[in-house]
Amino acid sequence: MGGFPLRLPLSARARYLALALAAAVLAGTFDFPAFATLDGDLVRIAYLPAAAVHASALTRPGDALGRVSLVPRMAGEQVLARTLATGKDPGEFRAALAAEERALFLPADAVLGRWLGVARGDYVDLTVVFQEGQAFCLGQGIEVLEVVTEPGEGSLIGGRPQPTAGVLLRATPSLAERLALAVESGRVYFSVAGYNAVPVPTQGAWLDQLYDGGEVPDEPIWP
Image (cartoon, rainbow, N blue to C red; front, side, top):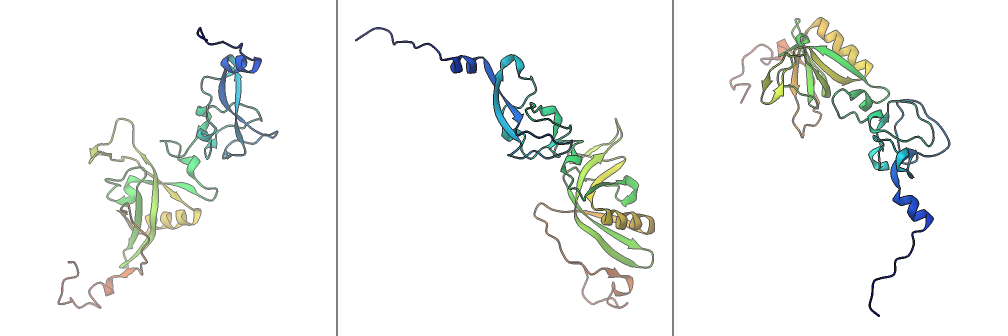
């Protein structure tokens, strides 16, 4: 038979969904404090009346997973994007720190080279040289969490901002102790690690061993 297709009336559920929007909400019946990390058991999708969905609410649970909540939360609460941190955006490095880690600030004049060419996300090795003629590697693969510049200052070299104040480094309290002592007692140098860098064992260096016990070798040290 010809004619137009039959249109069935919308069910009550279909009419409701047509007027609703999806929102990511907290699952379960418990609350949790600020700075907790959201996982798959904490977030679910819910359909709410359009007027009840916050403009900043996430619409996919996956967008909340692994992120840190900056505020305490209650079960059933909508998850707003601005209340989460990832640790990847500028100023959010605190969210990327493990419980035993700290962000150590080293000023520009604490190292030789004043962090020239260093950018957020780089990994650096730090070496200290003492006046007594000793040099030791303090740490390898130390992550630069943030480059701190004074407003309106700093220049670009190779497209990278040059710090005028210093950097924040990912560190444990024990590493922070070593770095602080090195800065106060010797001269600290930095090396920027490559993208495929791996830890390399070091033995330290002494001035009396620099030229093989004081004698200049026949072959040059550097290639």
